[in-house]
Length: 401
Image 1 (cartoon, one colour):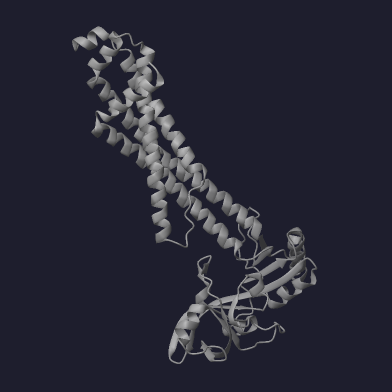
Image 2 (cartoon, rainbow, N blue to C red):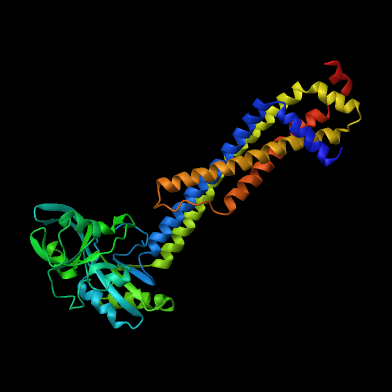
């Protein structure tokens, strides 16, 4: 029997039992669509997190007070707290030639009010260098001034949505706002920037770091952002920054310095593994679909005993009958896989319209892998019914025994 005849025979057999065929198509398509959609969600999560960290800046180091490592052994009898990072510590880092910029950070929440309107927002205390390090663009006005960081200037830069809520259609530049019990003059408005690492950039206010320390009554810094001059200088800047702080802290190595590249690599690896795992879990549904195909085809073999007996009586060898049923299984799996990819892509499109900020996109390997696994599943689970059909005795099959 020629390949074209095998194809026509299998197509006619599938068309002759539409309910059975649709059931198996639905099972396989749901399995493939699950793989495509879930891997797209995993890939979207990876791209979102990596993009958020990349948006923090370039050639970035983040210094935190305290060591993240543990040395093992019994815990100390008395608690040990890390020494605070101070503004002088941050400014001392500028002695190193491989360090281009330093932005000390003090962070807290406080009520911001103007003309009877009030909002509780994030208040960030920093310097002029915070804006180029974080790639924050000014919509109108100007950023914090390039002045001595140790002088407290009562000026503020507002996020775009905060400016709209406080001032409406009134001009904001030059106006005086109240942050908690202090007055600040608005000198700039940030360009709309959405969110970064869960923090709404449009709903915050940036003030000089010394003013923030006074506002929150603390000399300690929350973080220190360090920008190296180039990618080649990152490791040198990291070592130098650690040495400078160790010298200032009486020989104590009591800070943690995280490189942006290390964070990106770690999150990328974790989330890529998560995507593969989610795809694998979704692939279980393909195995279920394969079992369904096997069971339905076993029933089909019992219903088509006379047809199989006639084929064998006309001289069709076992290998030919085996091939006929395997082709049916592969055709079902292929059609179900194609339909599943289409459903998955439609689902991704709907999700992207519903969540435009989240970059939901299927990795290139996902549809290909889903289709390949679906066809392999159909072939593997189609072997048993095909072998049973091929081994039927033609005399018994035609006699109905």
